[in-house]
Image (cartoon, rainbow, N blue to C red; front, side, top):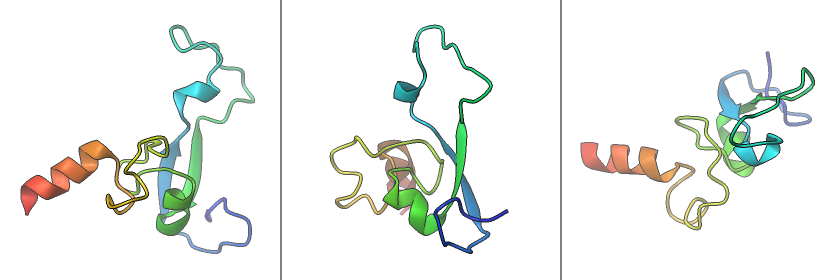
Length: 84
């Protein structure tokens, strides 16, 4: 299996969970068989598409995701910072 980004040949992948805004109803999601719940991107492209490279959850809407958190969501950044 390779990264889903067109032209990328990397095979070390992150399971990236699609944001809930793509699900029709957030309270009781109605998921059709064609709904893609997981995307597979390499470490580099997961960050480009707004996914945390550590947990795979979408974090692109967080204000500091691309500025200073090094591609980590707030929770993963906090976890790594506490280990330093």
